[in-house]
Length: 162
Image: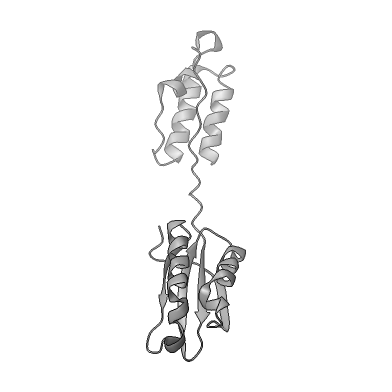
């Protein structure tokens, strides 16, 4: 950020500085960003004396800050012991609810743990805990008494997140 601010500062003070000092300052800013910043004709125009500058529309400066990583929540639905025997009347609605969350871009993946089938696990993305809780409370398995307890935990992805 300092290099970007330095470049802006160099642009703003160019009427007081010589064109050469301004270009050197801009080049130093570019170098401190690891040569990822190239001077454009617009950048060079700020280094001209005010009387020789041409009107150029302002442009947005690219941010050097990384994008905010997505937030994830891991939902675990703890099933009743006889889940396999009791789930059929609720299963289609449960699956439809999960697919609707996937279509909305909120549920990344979901499924039941096996051997034994004692829990279902969902990965939610870019929402908050209240959103996930509302999903659970509207879920067919929960409303049907097949989920006596559940946990919602923030999940920090280290490998595999986009």
